[in-house]
Each structure stands twice: as structure tokens, then as C-alpha cells.
Length: 237
Image (cartoon, rainbow, N blue to C red; front, side, top):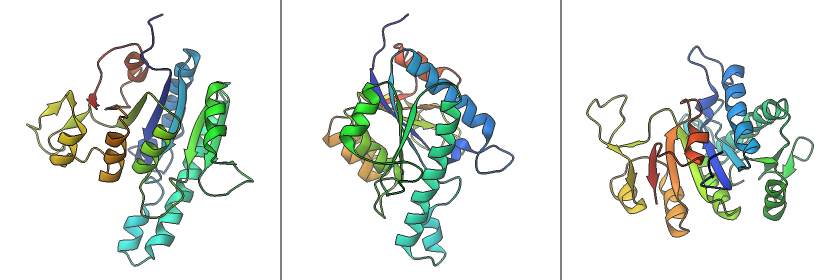
């Protein structure tokens, strides 16, 4: 078995990653495939923290633009991430892998409160930890929550899962000659406004020396190959 490049990672999934092309907020087949890949990482000794967005169900900022109070919209979005976290927890547990969902909002009947030391202990015991409800505060995205949690649990790498190969100068699905960046600095990502993550998330990673790998989550087995040292996606550091 190849030596692993990381012992502990934070994987950031968008809520849209759980959707099928034909509609529906959560596609069971996609959730199952992602759960299988996470289980494989755990079987090889990788400690996995996971943050999932809620955009497949609801986006608070979009609701606010339609007249809903922004704070209320963001709180609704946080609850959407809890729904996704519970769906992922169930799929991973069905594979025999222990999981804990930890919420930044108090929802004691369905998941644990987020406590940093307890989260680290869960990871040390080999449990997947899914961080739900963002940061628990309005006006912060789940990208910011992922950066914050990665730093708090002392992850060695944050992985931003997307539907494209990595970081491009423009949206490769819209701009045919968009330039692919195999590696770049946080300053470059910020200066060029490459929309990798929101500014708060990028600055958090930059100031705390948290490397980030942006890669295509739909390339089967790619995360495991990355852990075994293959150069996949774009590295920002």
C-alpha cells in the first residue's frame, strides 16, 4: 500500500453535488458512491472531516433577494445542511463506518453539538465527523465553515470538491479556452478573483497556512489516488 500524504483531511462538498441531473434534492446513488469513497479513505487510515453545503435544498442569500429576511434565510440554509449531513451519515453507517454529525446549531435530538475537542477525539477514534449548520452564524457560507473547521481540527489538507478538474481562469463549461492552474498561491486566487471559494474562506486558509486541493469529486477513486500521492486537481497554498 502506498504511503499516505495526509492523515487527517477536511472534505468540502457542495449541496449540489448530491443532486442528480434529472432533479431531486438528494440522489441516493450519488450519496452512496460518495459514502463508499469516504469509507475507503477510512479503511486506509485517513481521518475524515466533512462539510456539506445546503444549496440543493435552499440558499439563504437567494431567498433574501426574494424578500425573505437574510438572517432567517441563512438559518434555513443551515438547517438544510443538517438534512444533507444526516443523509450522508446514514449512507456511511450502512457501510459499517462510524459517523458523528456535529451541528453548530443546537439540535440535540438528531445530532451532537459542535465541540472542537470532542470532534478531534472522534477523528482520533476513526469516526467520520460531519460538521453541519455552517458556522452557526448568518452571513457566513459553508465554504467559510469548511475553512474554519479544517483549521480547528488541525487538518493537513482541505479538499474542495467540484464538478470540474480544478481551478481555471474562468468557468470551463462556459469559456472554451479557460486556463487550468495546476498550482497557485492564495494571493493569486484572491487577486484574480477566481471564485474558488468566498473571500473569507480563502483568507482564513491563507492566514493559517491551510493548503487546499480543488478537484473533481465525480472522478471515481480520485480522492484515494490523491492521498497516495498522485497530483490531482489544483493545489492552492
